[in-house]
Image (cartoon, rainbow, N blue to C red; front, side, top):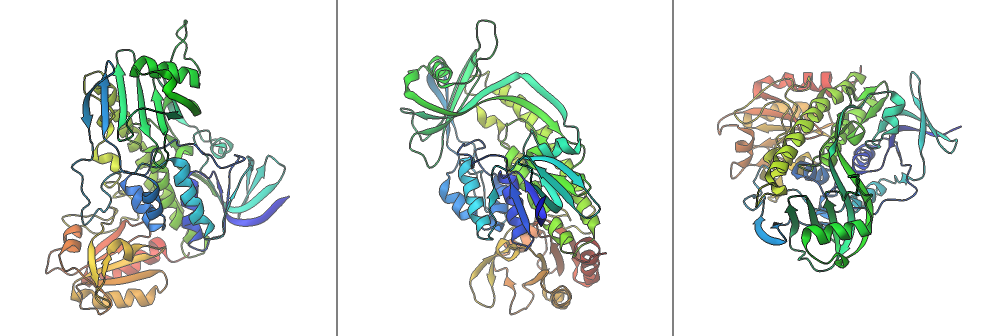
Amino acid sequence: MPSSPTTVLIVGSGPTGLTLAIDLARRDVDVTIIDKAPRHPRSSRAKGPNPRSLEVLEDLGVVDEVLAAGSAPLPMRKYRGGVAIADATPFADARPTPDAPYDRPWMIAQWRLEEALRDRLAEYRVRVGLGRELTGLTQGDASVTATLADGGGIEARYVVGCDGGHSAVRKLLGIPFEGRTDETQMMVCGDVEVQGPDRGFWHQWFDEDGAVMLCPIPGTRSGWWFQAGPETDAFGAPVPPSLKSFQRLFARHAGLPGGLLTQATLLSTYRVNERMVDRYRVGRVFLAGDAAHVHSIAGGLGMNTGIQDAYNLGWKLARVASGQADPALLDTYEEERLPVAADVLDVTAERLRATLEAIKKPGGGLDTAVTPRTGGLGDGYRWSSLARLGATPRLRAGDRAPDAPCRDIATGAPRRLFEAFAGPHFTLLGFGAATTSALREASAAHKGELRAYGVDAGDAHGLADDDGHARSAYGIGPGDDVLVLIRPDNHVGLITPAGGRRAIGEYLRAAALEGA
């Protein structure tokens, strides 16, 4: 028999599922999240969020804990023949800017990031149901019944599969996972304990027939991420990863005693997979994260793409579930995120090729995988049906909404735009005094759903752009009066002159706030 019904059932409690659960819970949506694992993992896996994911984590109220538990990316020390020949610091010249406060990814063990997300979710009185394996899905007109391996069931209005590359949800839906697996590109990975190497560097030993890479795990004394080309047996077959094989690989490629490596966990063999679905939704069931797309680890975009899938879906699902939006809004999830996944597969494949070429040469290393595109700050949805109207010399509808430091006129305290955006609402920015009446009308018409802020608009409760950073970031000239509507996932919905205030109401009624 199904247990108590829920509005949204999330299958999988990795970063994607937890991000979605928090986003729904903060919108007062009844959410249940389950995982087939009997206990929470203590493995490091992904190395951390990129700048765009850090912005998402800030909006969810967890970024300070993540920053405190992790560390900035380390310099990469590269070796040939066991001798250090070059150091590279990919983010040496990166600096926070007024419109982008996070200038580099952040290194944190995945188990620690998940712990921070679970703690945040618990503040909404939601906890992960462990040891609950999905075995069946039955869709009706108004709900989905999920069958579990223990014979129980959960009835939900919507189900989201965030259950990884081997997704049970995807398989039950019968959605193909098209692409390729490259058996020639293999790697063994694990969390290891090592004594000796300097923890101030990400060490990378390359030679003609293999490589070993060691990166310190933040928050540990002697824990490291270990990656290497696989050891092969006399017949050329890869040897299963183990402490002994890791020690042999370490001694062979690093030229250091294998006994320095004393423990190895999360032993796995990684093969380059480039696969994705052709749709993100079947009826009331959705896919997100690795359940929908997997790709090369080059550039570190796997976990980050999943987090951003969840951030895109959360506000849409919440508004439809609560009757605030027409169900057609849910179609824009696939419309917006499917092209992003395809692009990520292309970017990571190209970065992998470039990195494999680079490490053949002295001084080449994993820094080749880093480009501005791997930071996620340029991602947007200009093609979307929700990107209705408007552009400036710097922005178009669908783009990520920039940050900027301002001053709260009422209190005199500093206030960033991201602080104004934070929360489950739309935000309307009015640049210039001529936008005041439009701000007032929109705020009254959509009370509780939209927050309106005048920027140098003569509003006692607005924001002052004393240094011009907001106007610069949004491409709005000093004498221009412009309205900018920001979606709950901090992308620009539309841009219109102050006189076009009717467009704001039309957008909100048609695209987001009003039910059918």
